[in-house]
Image (cartoon, rainbow over all chains, first blue to last red; front, side, top):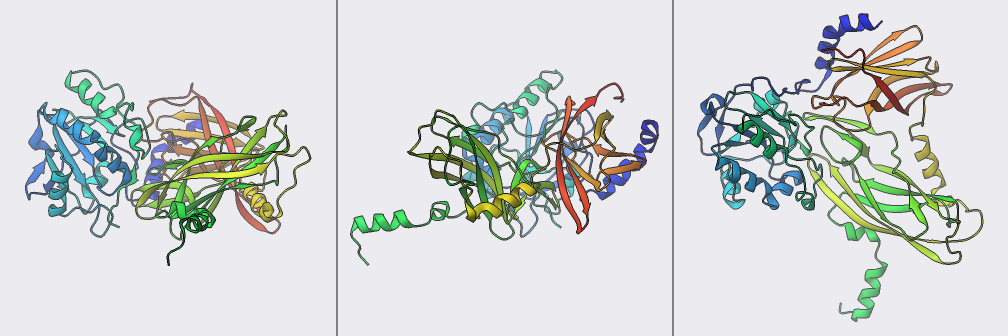
Length: 207
Length: 280
């Protein structure tokens, strides 16, 4: 019986994947190559992942109206993290996959206003309004964080920290998984916690 | 209209408590099952959540996004609250994944154990801070400070007629504590296998949800293999599972066929995971 199931597994899994929603059933695994993408930012400039070879890259899924995102911006937690690591040559990319007409949709103007108003230290705000890159990465929530090393290998996929709540008071004392992953990877060490379940609002993808 | 301040305060005090939660799409309240608390007995209290049309709150494992409802009690000495009991959740699918929760209305139950030394003849106040996340398209974190005043009497508690049906229906929707079957589970690569042997014939397994996040892939459709007296559920692991749990803590959802039709029922299952068969 068990052998039969194991034999059937690949076929069965394919079937399972086809029944899942628009997202890839398999999330990207740390240790694998981060998928290539090209997106235009809020200033009209194109960025490809390959432009940043040799540098660590952070992808932060962003929806300004999501309470979980606000938790980390209203407390300056996210800006602080951005400042700390962009100061160390890390490329920090916000990705906005909210479709037109959906919560948190950022036009280039809105994105630029937010960047100033919130005091962000991100390298760029990428606009992914058809959700193609979000789906490619399997981004499920805002925030959902990815860390990619200088060789283009994904080293972290998951939550920003270990306190899945929308409470601002929970920022203090939380273990920040992104900081830990960046510090370990930049020191040439293996990332101890390389995958966690992200928490937050669902990404407001186009139908 | 200029009312004296005393009158205004009285009017304010008489307003229904839901005004305090203005701006939210969920109204929260505490409801007692019985008219008084008896020392040494159990009083069941419900956290009643009423959601506006289209809005939902979450189950203990919210799924791919969302947050479970939390209650934090401030109880007088001599009362102890048990864990929240969650009725069978609904499954919500969206472009961004799968989540588990409740639309329209849900009663989350909590058993309060009264100490035998509880003072009789006085009213006690049960207070609770409740936090929830309510979502339609967008999500709003909601919270409320709730309170319920109950007398303490040394006689068999009387069930409040007004709430009797709601408590009965809520209990009907609670997962059973065990299922009458022999259960085993193992993990093979990225897939958990849960085997249910000799399940009662009127039960058709449909799904198995993990009671905690990060274990099973919430979005995957389970594959169910039937063979003689055994049903085996193939459950893809969560993409974020790093350390395999020792026990698969699940909620088994079945269709129960009865004389007058069938309905969805749930069972709490805790299946120890055999590690020997794990393979890359």
